[in-house]
Length: 139
Image (cartoon, rainbow, N blue to C red; front, top):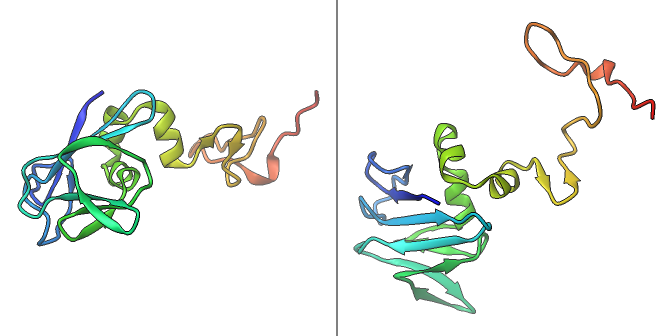
């Protein structure tokens, strides 16, 4: 588990260029079991989660992946913040199971409908799947 930093400064892992977001606003950890732990870094306008009809300020606590969050006046979710990580950092900070959900590759037994299943033929120069040559499983 590693915490990634969120804020307005370019020094953060996720940069949010919104005037209500502090330079070093929050940290988020994606745990190995797919949970998110949010820590407010003493931001000026705070970090909030939606609880029923009202917003509740949080300092440090677990948040659901898709529950509404406010960083200052910037609306997002924990999963949205993880998705905003640059590609080169995403594999470093996000556990494999959650990364699959974020990238839409697998969710349980559901596969991405854009991805072919079974053996396929690829272009030897580009590695792209050759759609007309999807090999049917002979089993």
